[in-house]
Image 1 (tube, rainbow, N blue to C red):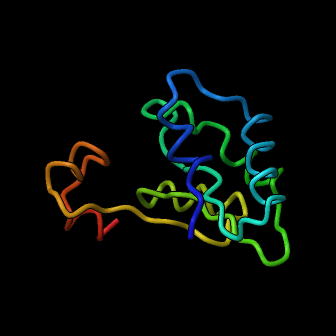
Image 2: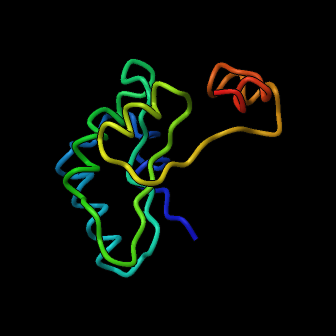
Image 3: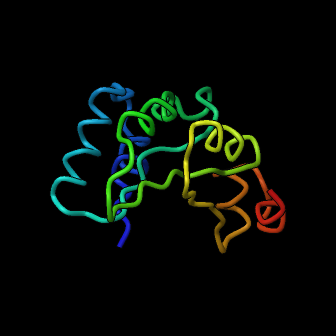
Length: 115
């Protein structure tokens, strides 16, 4: 089971949640015993301003024994940013629908696998 609230839940909020609050949210989930918490996404802050500062969230949440804290990376640029932030695990995205994939990450299904 992967908890995606700090990424998928918060990216849908109208107003961005502060980095401090995102870090606290992740810490509470991990303290509650969740083993895998997706803590953010390395996406364009122009398209998803709610995920700006994910590098700081990653650093401040840190590593915990027995827990994983992946981030979503939709493309090579996001991967490079995640790697620079010291991320050890990533989540990638694609969809079964060409239309959804194109609207969500501006790529066809085949293009999403190439990224």
